[in-house]
Image 1: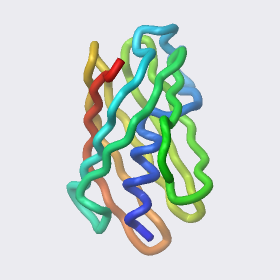
Image 2: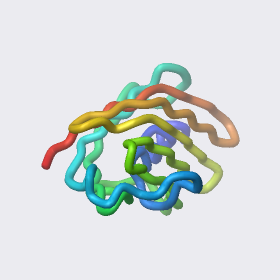
Image 3: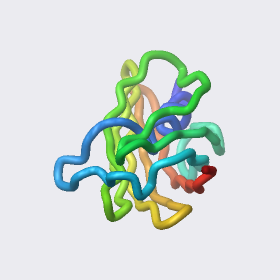
Image 4: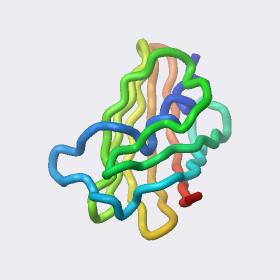
Length: 127
């Protein structure tokens, strides 16, 4: 159950939506990205890797199984700031960080009705 939190967060780490205080980047970070989500605390699997695609400051999951219906909101701002929120059933994950050039990093945390976990994420541009 909590295992899905890291999976859900990985899907969301660079996900679609909006950040209320900053406009999306027009195309500075557009392209394919690989994101690894690492669990530092809690019962989630140790690490997950997913492909994502950024288009006009919004990020889209590039494939795979997110473990069921997922609601995602977040944005990559023109300065590279990333903020996301993900919900699937009773599972919620949030994260923040920054992209710079062809890489990025940040922190995430998640919880379900039974468990919590948290950690960090790292991203690199693939195309």
